[in-house]
Image 1 (cartoon, rainbow, N blue to C red):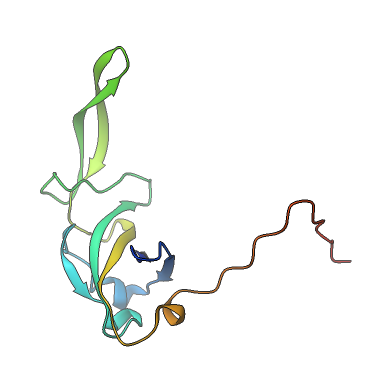
Image 2 (cartoon, rainbow, N blue to C red; image 1 turned 45 degrees about the horizontal axis):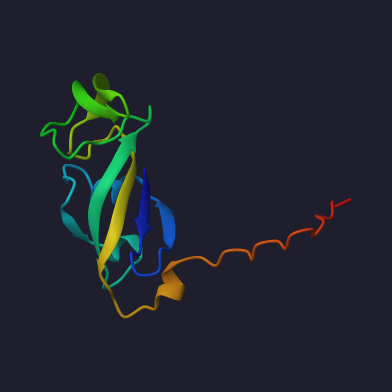
Length: 134
């Protein structure tokens, strides 16, 4: 299972690959619940679960109060009126079938943000050539 967390203040995101022991801490949690992030290496931080998806790519839906997949009818608004569309979604609870969980930081710890978000490579300048390794 993968945990994706983001910071609303800076817009930075990062991910953690969870082993089965750490993933079991998220099981049976629902979208919107807050969790302590200390077991994931983010001491003092609190995360709020905002969504996720399973291995087939079906998203979790906050409005479905169950654990499995279900077909629902969603209204799709277009320029020439609206149309009903049937889509498959998962319930709002995290189960063993969920492969990705999205969360946002709600409470900050003492560790600075630079320590929990990996450094990104600087973007290349326009016109700069990439050299091939020989």
